[in-house]
Image 1 (cartoon, rainbow, N blue to C red):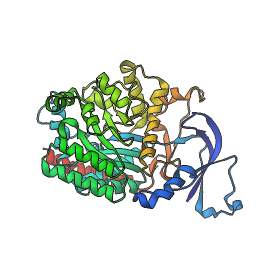
Image 2: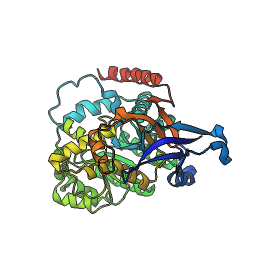
Image 3: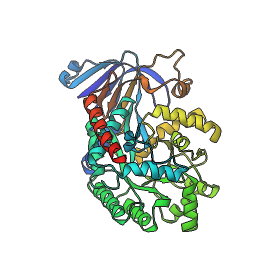
Image 4: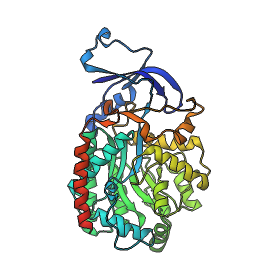
Length: 445
């Protein structure tokens, strides 16, 4: 069903201009293999959003009124929805989880005592529940596309398709990968390669996931690069999040992390995403800057893990924003990146906002469906100060919040209306999530 958004104040996501208009929104296919979506994806990008001078009369244009829904925006802002550039959806179950056996003393112990302890105990029902809960939380915060980095070492097979179907049932787009590593032995390593190959061979658009250099041997790195090349995609991995990653690489490979990746051919694809990049020296910064790869900033996670703050101002024009599993609120992530950037790199308003929106460029470059122009958010934002192109950056950084999200349109369909999810019963999703979270927590005790 087509949508007609009347009495809309269109906020152009690029120019930040505001105009009173009517928007015609057409739906596009959700999910599915690439071969079935190529033509529809072109339509999604070119023709799914049309600007009209005045609200049309559906019955007067030869259209079937039963196939067009008119939504009166009541003068609210309408703009492009948001995309989450780096996430771990299983972290949804970390809220209030049982404490680790001892307090971690450093970042490697945080991984070992908290995150790896959690991901080893996941099974497919838990993965499905965490994906549904993540999609629910995203939708209600105006996020309609998620780039996720998933790990479940003892529930690898079928994990990516489980996540994909959960996201699509809510109505959201996705770019998924399985986080491969050597930390759980050869069998799990091979299972990760098999799951990645199976998912990409099915026609799904995804990435080839790796954890980090210090958990990836040369064989896995080479095979991951080859797999990404085979399917025309890139890697998605953590890079120099903590100095321990660099120390391990120097000790075991005689070089720093980014140099190791460059030598392996891992920086050649414009579809590759490097998360964090906190501890890079000048030579590594030059390698990243001269490559076509994207970099995901996740300042709140870095602060939470006490690994330091990255400087991204000289890494090239492809820095995007992620949350690393901390939450799914991209307006909050924008504010955090800006505040953290004041001390780390003197980050300005324009570049902070550009990082929020640049995730759309990565998704388009990869060719993943579900992030076209028919993904919109209607914001109930009654500002005490004027809304102008000159002031909008200030409103994004200091005014707009997730609480202002009123209605969300994903791939041309309403998924949230008047702050309530339409595609699922919210209470059922949350009840399922609580049930599976308790199962997980019982395994952690």
